[in-house]
Length: 202
Image 1: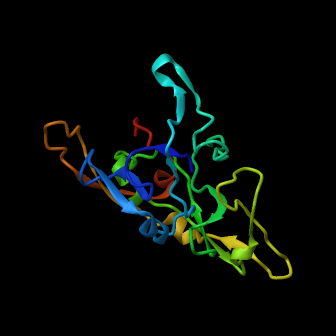
Image 2: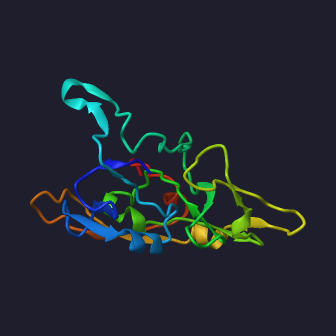
């Protein structure tokens, strides 16, 4: 993870709390590791300025910065139409039998970013696979991003069609919530509506 320039403890991870709006929350590094994160590190404290001279437009990395040689390679595939699942074959932090689904497609129930985590995902279940089968791959360097399937062990990964097809019910706003009641209603999505936006002409 990149280094950060800060006067606070290096052992904190910051994010935004949906309940608190724009108020940041913090968790300690040990607790962060317990959250089954893909990467156990939360960064390093940069004692030097990270950038050379940003006040005068020089945004190059300071050679004395702790961020030097700490860059991470990340693979971001081209988006496809109507994606129902997308797996990069690194496991769900601490459980080698679960391969996380990272698909994102603009469906009708994706209206509130603070609720994305509660929307349907479809992790693969790896069978006859252990931690030793996750290997370093060519597409990223922050985690073991390749999975070895072995014919002799009959290893494979699967997701049940029943899980892919299970209807999903969400409470969605029917109008903007800026200073007014959003008038939330429950909508159930099934079949093709789970995989692609509804045709507004219907």
